[in-house]
Length: 185
Image (cartoon, rainbow, N blue to C red; front, side, top):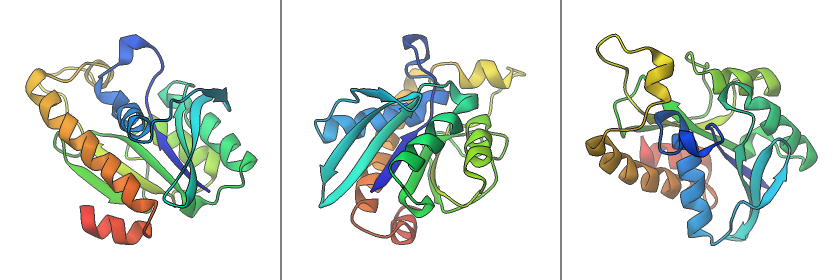
C-alpha cells in the first residue's frame, strides 16, 4: 500500500495559500479518482483508493503544518506502510513559482512540516515532491508570505503545476519513484 501526503493547514482561510499547495494536489487526485477525503482519523482527513491495481491512501494532515508528522507516522504504522511507499508533497521557497522537484531524501531545508515529518519518521529518507513558491520580496516576513494567497498570475501557473504534480503521483503508482523522478526533474 502507498501513501500520498499533501502538507497544508486546515481551514478555509488557508485555501489557495502558498503553504497549502500540498493540499491542492491531494484535492486534485481525489477529484481524478472520484474519491472524497471522507475518513477522519490519524489527525487527518484521508481516502482509501484502489486504482492501477494498487491500493493507496490520500492524506491531508489536519494538525497544522508544523505538526504534520503527528498524522503521517500513525497512519503509516497502522497500515504498515514502508518508507519507500510514501511521498510527501509540499511548498518550497527555494524553487521558482511553479517549478517541481522530486527527491528521494533530503533535509527539511527550513520547512517546519518536513522537520516534523523527519522527526516522527526518524529519517530524511522518504520520497517528496517539492513545489516552488519562491521567496518573499520587499522585506515581507516568511510566515506572512507562505500564509498569503498566490497572485493571480502565479495562480494560473500553479494550477498547471498542481496538474503536473498529480500526474507524477499517478505515474508513481505504476513505476518506481526513481524513474518518475528522472521523468519530472
